[in-house]
Length: 57
Image (cartoon, rainbow, N blue to C red; front, top):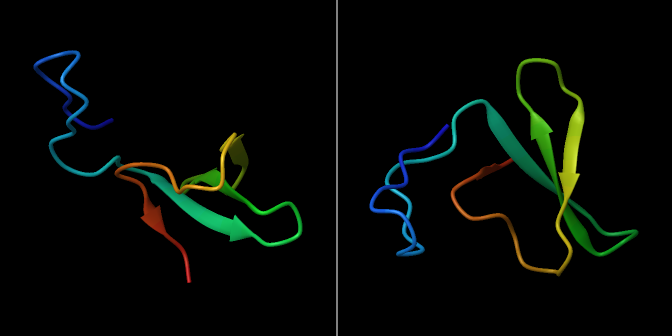
């Protein structure tokens, strides 16, 4: 995972490893996926993308 110190400053150093995100237009949300297994992990509660997670094309 990404380094995120000092805690509480809402700032990430580097990208989150082994994760990607894809936009699902049907539900208008971003979905996070594990790059190793390909399984979907999480759905964003708002319409903004995840911070520090690369996007799939």
